[in-house]
Length: 169
Image (cartoon, rainbow, N blue to C red):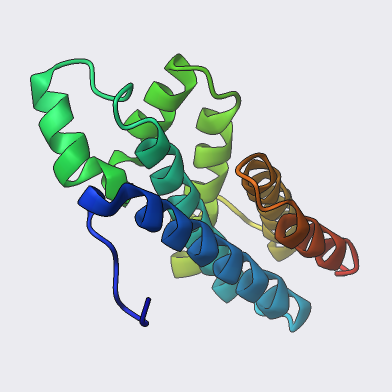
């Protein structure tokens, strides 16, 4: 599959594999950027990995996600992409069908997304200290990696966690 080529929802298996690989690449970039001191860029990469993982979870559970015909249409047309504006509702629904702690992980991912854009400016960011953002970023990367492990990518996720543990705050 070429760069920029995203499988359609009709090819669900390939789409799921594509998004899992995307999440792994984004997490590797996040750890590399964090290692180099680029916490805001790393936060955005971790956020993109989160969106990819949410997309995978939605796609795996596409038949369980919608509560009615209107939602079914939305999930099949847009929801499987895990749009940023829909992440809170999607995380809630994933918890309803049995996933744990996704609302908390999603909240953390959105905080770091705002940090990536706004830095540590009061009123525009959830962080007043860069070190707090970095510690939260490490937690997010680890949580996403743990989810990726449950999706069959143990080796890749463990490598990310090992690399993450070597990074100083």
